[in-house]
Every structure is written in structure tokens, then in C-alpha cells.
Image (cartoon, rainbow, N blue to C red; front, side):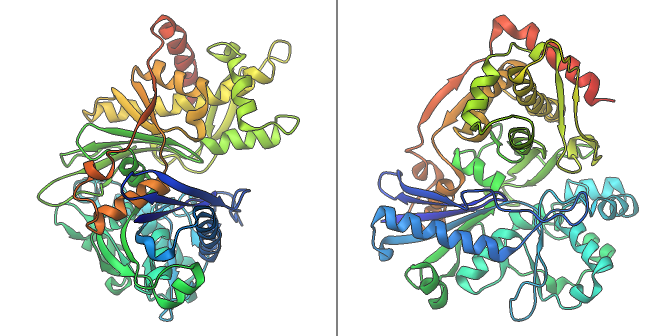
Length: 492
């Protein structure tokens, strides 16, 4: 028996096929091989065509099936992970009305900030645990005001993973986890937020049926089965946003456990069992996958928009030659801690939550044409990303969440020795790396939702730690000096 997971990112769509008995990934692939485009008609905008996600999912799925050679009837369940906070709108025929306004689009900030002020900060935070910011609800408010002709045709709203589930099953639904990431869920009342619906004037009918995260959420239709080469009736039994799902992939379910990613954006995500919030709303609190009113499990999410996208931008625009990311990692190791005084502020991918939704842009400081070289620049970029993580983790610590052990997949920026050593040393945390990914995690989670696994511990019993990185105690002062210098620029 096998399980398949799909991870709908903003750069690519990945599919992973997992064998139920061993928990091993037997085939995995992603499409496209170059990053999916984001359309930005104006500064701060970011849109993608949902049909592009579906097209690339089909390509990834076909590759996985061809490489594995398994019979489609052997796939027992499907799990879905997605880029969080995107807005997908469909009409009564379930046709997409406009491109998706995705996670890093910051056009709706002013709508969220106005709602935060006019509903009342204390009321918003105590009920929603976040300010509306530029999340899904605020993006819908932008559409209502700026594109009334589109708004008038809306039948249902969705997040990106809900759209994929709809394409597979023909049914439109959401989860409490998804509603919370869109800032539609009232944690005090344990229901849809009347304050948000009333303030923005949204029709309650726009919200689809609510399904559990772990459950049979629908079955693959005949038409979707034909498109993909799946068996009709295969259940979709799990879905979650990419950061809760990354935590799932690392078997992070319990209070005090922490997961991290460092892809296009960077995230530190810890589990909390008390309803708390940051008074300045610099970190986000969402329902974790196993949250229930009687069992509080909240994900405290620190997000840095400008992470791998900065590394990619520097690779494509500032480094001569066709160097790979591994080449850049090697270059970074040739420079010393602190990059000879260069500090890089990585906030060039829209408004940053830890800066209270300010959009300050990226900047480079301290470059000296006579002493600095490629390795110094590349190291400064990677250190700057790490320092932004630490800047945000200090907020998490203020909320009472200790940062002692961080689990991550051995992928993206975590493949860089400079990145992971700097993160361990400046934070004082031990870094544990695992050979897993979001698509494989979604596949195993689908096994839980379908009742194939009895618990998350059974589903993730095969998860193996492949590397442990301890803080470099002998170099603590050097890392701290570099971080303090970086903060002097970040706090400006």
C-alpha cells in the first residue's frame, strides 16, 4: 500500500509517494524545474494562476508514478500541503475568477491595519490572536473594493490547497487550520469570526463547508482520476498549510516542539498549549493540525518573507558565472564569521510581520571595495537571513516559548553549513536535521486521516535524524558581535 502527498509551493509543486509499511519515500519529484513565475503588476503585488499549480501537480504526479512503477490502485490516500494565506476565488461553476493573490502579496496591508484599529486591537488579538494584516481576509477586502465586478461573482473563497482538493474531489471545503491562517476564525467563540465578516461586509455563504484536518474530505472524481492516472474514489484525507504541515513532517505535535523551514520564505514554528498572542502581532498564532477546543494546540509562526528568495536574487543578479547553490555554500565558508563587517538586511519580499507590517526593503551595509570579495558577500547574505530569524525568535521567547531544539528538513538553506552553524550559534539552540519533506509529510498524514495509521507516532516512526548541529561555544562572541551590528541596521 502507498500514500501520496502533494506540496503546492510558490516555486514548484512536489509529489512524494510513501510506502505505508516502511514509511519510506519510494519516489519524489517536483515541477517546474525552474521556479514558477509570480506576476507583479505593481510593487508589493504577487499573483499566480491556480491552473498552473494543477498543471505542475499533474506533471509531478506522472513522474512519480512512472519512476515507481506501482499500480494506481495501490494508492490508498492523498494528502495536500500548500503555500499559506493565498486567496482563490471561484464562481458557481467552480471556475477561477482571477489569479490567486498569494502569501507574499502586501497590497492589502492597509485594509488589515484599518480593521485592526476600528474593530479594536485588544478585541482582535484576544479573539483572532493576530491582526488581519495582509492575510486572506484582508486580500478579499481589497477585491471587494478594487474589483467589485469580480466580487459580485464570488461563490466560494479558498486557500491554495482547498483549490487542489476541489480539483481532485469536485467539492469545496476548508478546515479550521485554514480558516485561522486566513484570519477568519474566532478562538474565543470557536467559530467563524462575526467581527471580521461584519466589519468587511463579507457574505457568510462565501465560506465553504468546514472539514477536519485528518478525515476523509472527499474522493477523487472520475474526471480527476482520468487526468492524473489515479483510481476513482481514492480519498483525500489530510490537508494543511505548508508550515503546520512542515511541523507534521517532523512529528512536531506537542507543546514546546519547534520546526523550521528556510525556502523562499523562512519560518520558525513552535507549538503552544495556551491561548496567547503578541501584543504587537509580530508573530502569528494559528490553529495547529491537532487543535481542538478541548485540546489547545496553537502554532506560533515566525515568518521572514525575505529568505531563500534573497539567496536566489543574489545568485541570479550579483554572482558572475553559472554557480549552483552548493557552489555558493562553499563560497560562504571561505569568509569568516561576520563577513568582514558586511551586514545584509533581507526584507526585500514585501511587508514583514516582525517589523509590524512595515515594508523596509533589503539593504547591504558596510561594503568596502578594497577588502570584500564574493565569499564575504555570500556569507553576509546567509548570516543576514539567520539574524532575521533570531530577531523574531526573541519575540517568541518573550511570549514564554523557549528555543532549545529546532527540527528541520535537510533542504534549502539548511543545506548550507554557514546557515545552520550560524543559526545554532546565535540562538544557542541545537539544530536537528531530518531526511523528509512537506510532500512526504502530507502523504503520511493522509494515512492518519484515512485510519491507516493509528497515531502520528506510528505514522512517523520511520523518521530518522541525519545530522545534529550544536552551537559553536568557542565562537559565541563573534556571532553575537555580528548579530548586534546587524541589529543596529535592522532597528533603524
